[in-house]
Amino acid sequence: MTAGELSDRFDVSKPTMSAHFAVLKEADLVHAEKAGKSVIYHLKLSVLEEALLGFVHSFGLDAEPSPSKEEPAQ
Image 1 (spheres, rainbow, N blue to C red):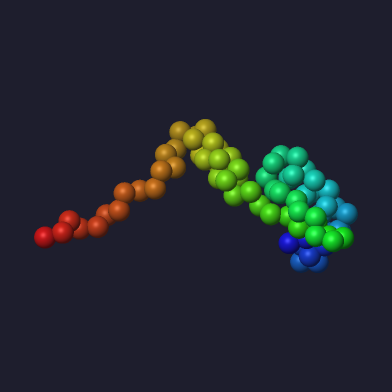
Image 2: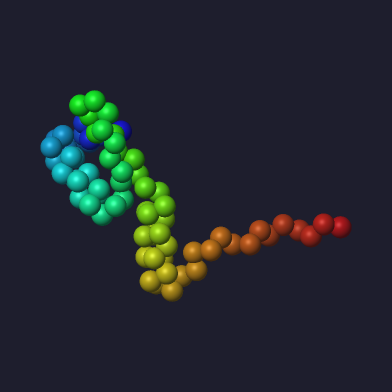
């Protein structure tokens, strides 16, 4: 989505939304791709996942998926 498309969905101006995206881009959380006069932003899920896992681990929590509780085959 472009900053303009997102700003239309929220009570935020296009320049403000673009400024927020600039911060996200600087933090390497989004990738910006020029498309004509617009800039399309893509969320870098791998970076976000690493950040969230680091946050979870800082509390000493295990972020690994729980083992399946299926019954053993007979």
